[in-house]
Length: 428
Image (cartoon, rainbow, N blue to C red; front, side, top):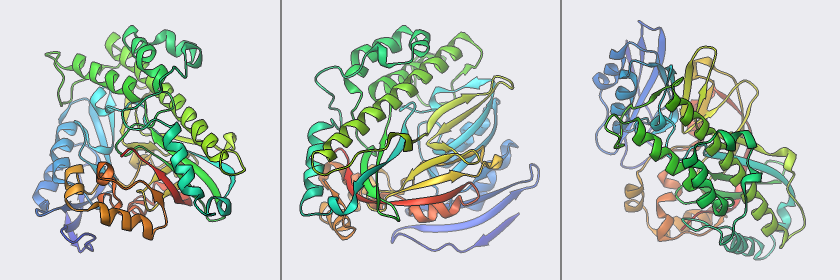
């Protein structure tokens, strides 16, 4: 059953068409709305997603054509039970970013992604907004953070952590390969931001309480681990995109699961060190401190194994949203982040989006915006940030409208607070 309905355009070059399709075989309603630069997805293409006879729910009102092929490939695997695509869906590696799959007895490294255990975390502080707004305080804080916090491919010159900083059982259970990555790279990468969409943001809520939000992951430890297992899972041991995985109970599947868990723990350690570095940088300029007990952490690249059923939930660019569970969903450099509470929706596999999701590829984002326009966007929003050629692909216009994205998942989460940005730190 197809029912067309108009959808308002939100970019000058976008062609957006929307319709709702109900697959009566599974009684699972699916909302499909396509956003393309010049070529709208047809009803027939959307309808073809039902050929696999598996439950599929899409909450997005904007989706790239390239996602269609990835959805088909995921659903075509016999071990995949069902799939959910969230409002921030966009093309990923094998499985779209912003999607969740339930799998029977298998684990797929490529469905977790390259940045294993990547997270967003936020912590409330006692810093006062009015103190941050005085004179050039924000500019000085930004400068201090860039001096103290390595961004991009940079790392610390000396080791910041050691084996004693990792959970003993996780370290003992990890493979020698991952232990080597940690001892060679991780010890100097704890407390480093990375590049791309990773950020630190200092902002304030409706009551002018100041928060520090961090988006970062497991750095080279996680990336190299992902590449290692993607290669091992390939039948010709050469890597590459595709639904190649391990039986979850096999030695290889268990090894990946343990190493994934180690990378997740390292990503959390990285976050804690980033928060510590940023907190110290702010305290050099104004009075106050972070409140560690207020820390909210939500992970968006992982696999969760239910040992009772053997089913594995793969979240790729998706946040767990159990009933009452707090999460943090960032928008873009201009529009801030949102503290949310999950509603525990089983239709969405207890998940929500992990951000706004890209509307332009990095190349297209650079082609459709200038550094001057980027700076003007941020100045008009009164956000202190480095707006350079190197991070032009992170300009706010590269992302979907976060307010629309939140509205599209109102059955999945409740918005608790909007943290508006004062300072944004990204690699440039």
